[in-house]
Structure formats: C-alpha cells, structure tokens
Length: 148
Image (cartoon, rainbow, N blue to C red; front, side):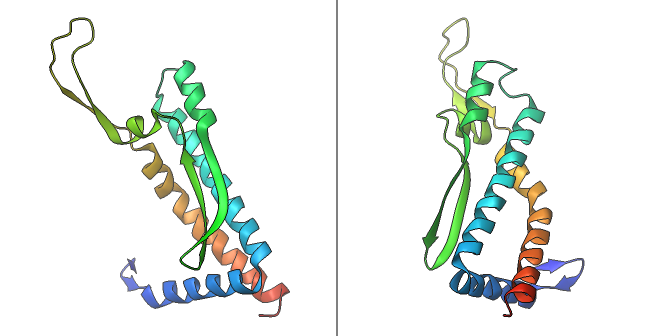
C-alpha cells in the first residue's frame, strides 16, 4: 500500500508476520488486545451512528445502539479475529440502504431507493489510524517486555 508516496507493503507484511508471531507466542495477550481493539471500534461505531441522527432519538435508535456489539475472539484460517457488528434486524438497512416498496400514506406501489448512511464503513475509516498506532504499541510492548 502506498502512503504519502512511499510503498509500505513490505512493512505491512512485517507487521502482519509480527502479529502472527504474537498470537502464536502470546495467545492470551493477543486475544486481550484484539478484544480491546474491537470494543474501541464499537465505541466509534456508536458515536458515528449518533452523529448521523439515525432514528431521531426514538426507540429504534436506542435498540440499534444497544445491538452494536463486540464478538468473541476466534481463529479463522490460523489468524485471530474479533468482530464489532450490529445485530439489529434494521442495522444493515440503515447502513447500506434499501428499496422502499409502496408509498407512505398512499399505497402507490412505487419503489424508492433509500440511501444508507454507511456508518460502519465511516467508523472503520476514522478508527484505522488509531488502530495502527495501537498495533505498533502492542508490538513494541511485546518486543520490550517479553524478549522476543
């Protein structure tokens, strides 16, 4: 990936290898780090959802905010993962958009596309810089305190 005109793909591969080593050598600390990072992303997602004013401070807004959760840490293809997701049935509709069938007061049958807010992607983008800094701090701590 090129950042500010520099190709950082080799550095990204090195960091990925270091995280793989951390999960193999220090599995408990790696799981704790991933869970903490997912909770931080969770907070960013909730704040982004609130910022858009989706649901107009009603019951649905409170339900969706309560359903934005952090999952368990799990292994997939040999790598540790942890999800931050929205489990509400309407959450993905507010995020990605949907086709509204029919009309509101008069049932005309006209289909209308309602654009989504894309709050999950925007939260992810705003969280990335802090996550990279946290990964770097975790790797520094792993190298300094655990002699790797």
